[in-house]
Length: 369
Image (cartoon, rainbow, N blue to C red; front, side, top):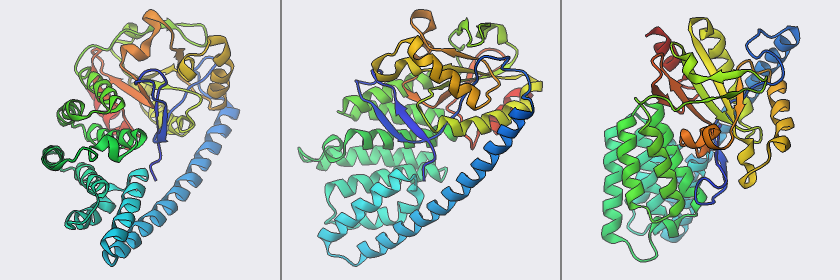
């Protein structure tokens, strides 16, 4: 299953609030956050690792069950009447999208597209599966060509009630866009991502999808440019200035205490932090709890933020997003969380939205430069 949590921040994308399956990270409170954990901290770390191992094993087994379900649904659809097959295909494709199993559903998508009697929504979902599955396989040029072909083909045959906005609800469309974006970013395909999301922004008539694409393009355009300034006071009352960290490799992570998967991300962030901190790797957290429900007061969210950080024994400094020069989320174009930015020793952004899969490999290359 998709083991992450993509959350559209309230008020930042056309007033849409959305919680979807996707990743995580976290931070700490009223002590020296860079000091090594004591015995209690080590016990917490060991307990956290054991819990993560149990959850990982459970997710692997659940993923296998989902794959078996997709296989059986595909077999069922192949022997059904066109009307019943369309219903089964739609169920299969929606499950594949929700569980991040695009490559598993790709053969069935091809099967559905060969049927002239597939419904418009089934064709749209099957085409979407193929676009993202190609990116999953590392066939990025093919994926981009499929996307262009899908858009061109839909223009040629589209009926008034067959545009994607009417075929799928907004949360589903956003989930699809985000899944495609993650494939391209994690593959380091920044140019392909720019081309794909410019095309989606131009062709989509859904305001939320357009806004998401624009925000993604803003972040992509930051790669290779100096990181926007971050200067303030962390939760320990210590001054923090990103400019003073020039010469180090820094990951800026945006998070919220109410995004539960952020807890899981702490483990792999902490692992990389421990492995590379002595070589000039640092992490800075930016908490976004004040953006919840369209805007919350600092004094209201602060206890939850401190509780989260202390409970997860986070060792790096954290600031809380504010207004004006302290609105770091706006400066970095952050509209979904988890979100992170890797800053090279020269102060330029070199990667965005690192995940458990690629964090260590990308950081190791950055600290070696």
